[in-house]
Amino acid sequence: MLKTIVIMLIAVTAGTVGDILLAKGMKQLGDLSTMNLRGIMEVALRAMTEWKIVLGTAMLALFFFLWLAVLSWEDLSVALPMQALNYVLVAILAKYLLHEEVSPLRWGGIALVCVGVMLITKSSTSDKKPSPELAQPTSIESRTGGA
Image (cartoon, rainbow, N blue to C red):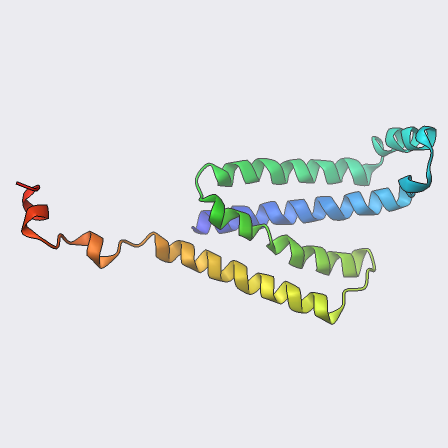
């Protein structure tokens, strides 16, 4: 489980940094919703050379490959909720790097998400312990192989 937590923390950090870089890069390039097709194509070409967008995409690729690794050994019902830690990092980085307003209500929601992730992670470690009923046979038939 420690391996899962460490890799997920690295993955979530990479994904969050990637998202922040993409947001910063796209804000610099302009609002696509106000552009015609030619303007969008020009921005798309500029985006391919904008270092924030290129690095952001690379960070998201790192997230993706770490996520694939975690899925190769961990239950999805445990791993997927760990991605919710992204909400914490996004709120912190968006507040300080993008200068976005994060309301107290949003912080409260983020705290609840963190509690939920901790409960799911804790349940994963307790799920893997054998229960006493399964560890010891309860009848003579089960001890002798059913004969």
